[in-house]
Image (cartoon, rainbow, N blue to C red; front, top):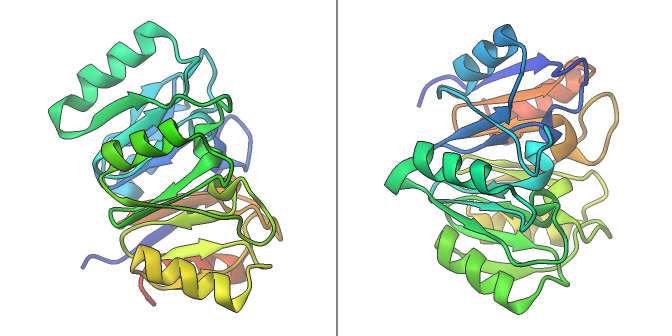
Length: 228
């Protein structure tokens, strides 16, 4: 497998890059109006041409959408033209579906790879069924490190994963078992425990916030790069 690259970056002058990006091995979404040089770097690291979009009229793409290689889940307040554009661009290879939930921060509700999805414990039953059908995975519900918005504290790909530093040994073991990849605890942006806020990754590389320290980057490389 090709070398796993980790690149520190800011987006819109912000180190919380994970709130702006959705990354999988099939597609990468970035906010409309992103700086061209930043978009180019993201594409080079993740080895995909980023798709510019807004979700519900905002640039917080990573907070409001989430998925895996097979599907993308978007909130009920997505605008019709945004939904049509995403379906057209992603084509038949990726299912785009609205998640029927009172909570529109879909990216914070779901952590998923090609094998499993871990979701917000209080998520509605009809939403869980859609996640299972669209992402084509087993769906699990539980909090991690005392945090119910699991999409904000778990970053996982088909190669590895990083989780909130307060996750217990049992929780790390559970995550590794359901996702089928090694999971390590860690932080981003010089000590931020909500790892997804400062991290967007697929199996080929990772974008991290520019405040992320050298030791944190080494840990992320180990966690998501399969021990590289």
